[in-house]
Image 1 (spheres, rainbow, N blue to C red):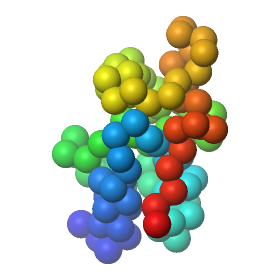
Image 2: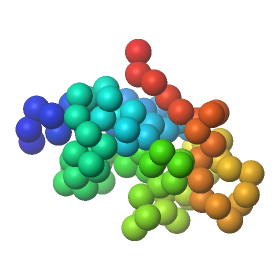
Image 3: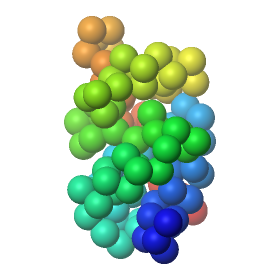
Length: 98
C-alpha cells in the first residue's frame, strides 16, 4: 500500500457511523484528486467502511448502491426524503475530520 493509499484508507476508516464524506472531501484531506480516492478505495478491500463515501450528489458507489444504502440506513445516516432516491442528505450527514 502506498503512503497516499494508506492516508486515504485512514481517513475513510475514521468516518463515524451515521456520517459520510464525499470523494472530493477525502481528496482534499489527502491532497489528491477524487478519482485517485475512488481507485484507492477500489483496491483497499472491504475492511474499511466504503459505504460512507459518496459522490458530490450524496449517491453511493453505483455498483453497490443498494448494499451501501442498506448499511447507511442501519447506521441511521440522514438520507434524502425521497425513499427511492438512494441519496444521503449531505447537509446533515457530512463529516469533516478534526
